[in-house]
Image: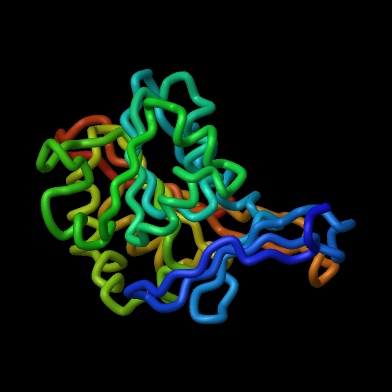
Length: 253
């Protein structure tokens, strides 16, 4: 018989104390849930993953063509990455994760998406700091300055609420310009947020990208007994580098 609560892993990391736990959630009909805590703060749960899946679908649905090369920034409990692999067009996915224990959970198949990710040859785990790579030569561990079809990012709570102060420079015009340099023409940068899309950040994205949309994702919150929301920003680079293009206005959907 499975215990009502079980701590599956505990590690001290550069960001603090990291815990993976499993429990039967009485607020969700007793179903089994996996949760991640960092320094006593809940940062991930299998109770809530609609936003992570929407991040993939909204980002990749903005692409055309096939044979997509995708970067996922932040592995978490693997929902964004697992959704990428559902697309036949996805030929390679590099998952950049700063915390080695999170990668190990998937490799050891301690978490629900561990098996599908670890056993798919298209999935490459890259234990590194996404933000440091964005300041340097990019996300491909073998090919410096390699360009991708899509970069999907789910690490910070919002562009203003950061897990670490060193992440702040990415959410600036210069940081987003560097990030865009790792996208092919027509490539997409999509960003998850714990809050609805914010107008000022939409404007900032519009300074660098050619098409910008903000999406609100609604889902049930069984803990509070109400409907919660996440936000997803989708920013697309032009398919051409020709001058004279006009940037369309940003929109919230």
